[in-house]
Image 1 (cartoon, helix red, strand yellow):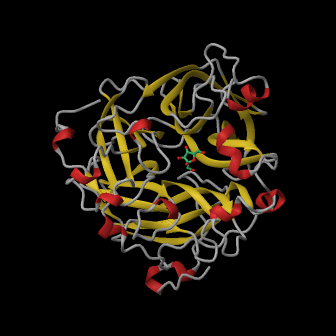
Image 2 (cartoon, rainbow, N blue to C red):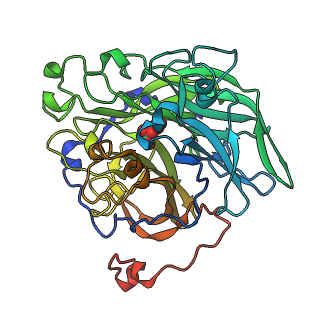
Length: 450
Ligand code: FRU
């Protein structure tokens, strides 16, 4: 809902993540995560697990239902080659009482990608999840106990060949129940498409001239200062003719890298009624994929975080698979990159692809950052090289489970890695964290060793 202090968002210039800002990206003690090793206990050895998000209340706090917290993850059978997992992604939920041990409750939607693949892709039922598979998302547990599971409908439901069409969708109407044995989420869910790219503010697939088209990863957010109900998402900015484009500080050949962070608002606060608006951040000329955007509000400042890849930076820029962050004094900016370049958290140079798809959430004075354990022990191989390894080697080098949670300090426009918790340890703010190693305390001059 809007209050009177909300000005017309379309009057503001769209914040840019510029090439000159991104040119300053460098690994440093403040931004490198500890090396990740395989966990002693995998969350679920039968599953590849990657992008993950909490079930949250409308105010963004993590929902606690009769002592359980819930996460949703993109998942696929661990028998599948890791590179194929995106083609059959299924959203499963996991619940925990202590934030350490997670129990898989099963697929959230009865008619998700896997079940249809197992029977027949062409057999469509009514009311099933949209898309040929479901990609990342967010989940709202509303005050009335109503569940809204936002997701990316990737491909179309009945397609016989995989396509990369993406629409932003929701499954609503499911219920959450608990008993002494655990927590269960059950349908039926009503599925509807909430947003499609309009072709003017947000690129449609057939306008895309570059790599990896995006319109995905809805993130529910209620602005604590204005009360506005928003959905953020990953998108691309249309560039009809690069030669004529004057809005961006980049050469025409860089403009196929046109990632953006989109926004839609719900004027009534209804979680299923959205109006699309112009993006809150663009990385045109800089980077193609501004993935899984989300916001943390701290000290009246808006911290916008997103994940991106080494290979999606435009020519002439060197970035990493990393969490990038920006700060502004209101949701629509103007955003300034954290740590000057935007780099907040990355993998060590010796293990550059060990984790991906980060999600930051507040924990008292700190920020906690979850992610998934991606490819490790690559010994200099790139992600492209991995696809050419024998299948058992591709499997051996893929983590496919929750990564250690990283602890960050946030101070104005700067952030700093403090250390890490165990794999998949996702504490609530009420829980104390272990004392930090002295090397991470600023007053004692941290040296970045773990
Ligand atoms: C990030 C991501 C998301 C997408 C998902 C698909 O890891 O690219 O943007 O929803 O993976 O598997």
